[in-house]
Image 1 (tube, rainbow, N blue to C red):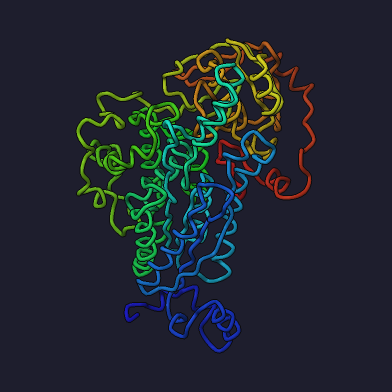
Image 2 (cartoon, one colour):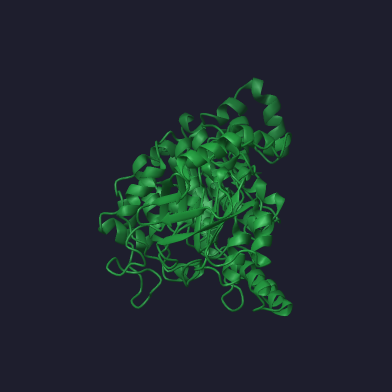
Length: 559
């Protein structure tokens, strides 16, 4: 306690010091505060625990470890909850419209509780994928010493299965390749316990991005959900936030332009989710870093894809954990001049200092490729523009799907209609499936198209059709898919003007997405277009639709 300075209690002192704070102290005594606790910096432990998803079902225990760490270092940990939803449960339903919205609710709730209660520092523990950017955005707005802890990845299911195996089984059943008993077997065994979805899907993508950004302790992104490593990670985060308070190191000192460039290059090397683009734009907005889609283009030209991870690859995150996680990859990238080593991190050291003693991967592993034998020589996250998406769209193209697709539009208003068309055989080889009115405003909420893309793969059409949408994709989606098309249909973007049979070209090499219809015809269609009425007029979805920015700007609500 002797090294606790007044500056470390900048916010909590306003809440608990002086005779006028006696009512507040009385309330805190009821939850366990002692006289000595009022002299300590208060550390808010933001827990995303809930039993609504395996991603977060264990996080209450992890939050308690972070609390213990903060207390052991001379602080007073205070656990509070924010929400989580489950994409894996909600995908394909109306409820999925709340998914991206939950990112904003999480950020708002962390800012609200910490701002009200006067917490001096924050540790946030997140599992499901919106938790992570939501926690970071909330902590960034507060700009108080903060650390993010990832809840950890799930173990593989029986037969090397995971949640995507279950989604794709639905398509295989529709094709006739799998009977109901086989679907049930996969359903029963694919999710064996706690942890986030097991491939390089959005949760593991964002955990890796946040570690590369410097906002997690080294190794946090590549640990199993259950085990001593993850418990220790949480305890150390609680301890370390006290050191950040002592040194007055805050999120804006860490989340710099260079740090975001590091995060982008790491998720490219890992073949990460397209959601990483959306979330990094939003996180940068929270600290006033000017990050745009063009930055992903320029960094993507000089960053190879090195990780053979699901969904497009072979391995699961738990297998990358077993060989050392992402730290050896980052060391390789640093040594090759691909990362900025001079950026500050939550350790109080630079990235280069954190990586100085990291050992390389074991000989013979083939999860992370060498630079001279990449899976793809440049980024799989391809930013496309053209007369179909003037302000940008995001494609996930590893090269396994090919680099160019030409086909005829098969247009659907909404995900449900598209899924039915895929499963009933309406969609055929050569089609470009168009799913519109699923953008941030039009959905509202920008649903993920995991059910349609999984149905495409399950029906064996992965190399025969393309899918484009103003919605977005799960990190588990793969195939020739383009999302985040802007302007979105609800705002009268060109995707709203497409008709069945229109010729569409998607070219990953020239980074173009075009429709072979003249400007004059598009103008005629635009003149006849009528904006639909809002789907929701009350509640959180209506508020979100009114506030949210374009997907090309991160779909944020406080732009």
